[in-house]
Image 1 (cartoon, rainbow, N blue to C red):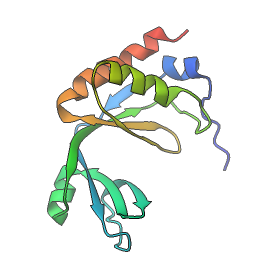
Image 2: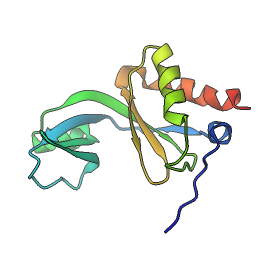
Image 3: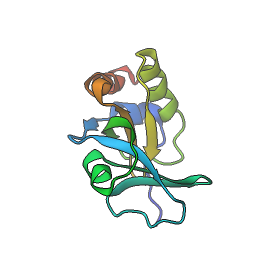
Image 4: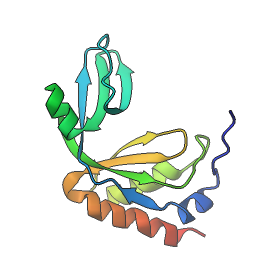
Length: 134
């Protein structure tokens, strides 16, 4: 399979179309040898354990420790993993507003986790990016 997502930054920004997910998410960790719950949205194996991002209700149901309550914004434009500058652009714009983020690049899209109380503001900032593209 050879997916050909967009690589031109201006073209990506014009079509960024961010979408805010309705749910709340958290970051958590499990032992590095433990099975990954099927409800995990994202996972990364690290030396200290396996980091997970999952819906808050699912982490609660499993009794997992939680940090960074957040909302998920998906940039619905089809991006290539070879594109250059997208994460830097969105990170800079959100940083200028004092909004932290954690980004995950998927096969088709970039997904951004932002603090719950700043999610609507982050969405507006990302929506404005499309009007700045050349």
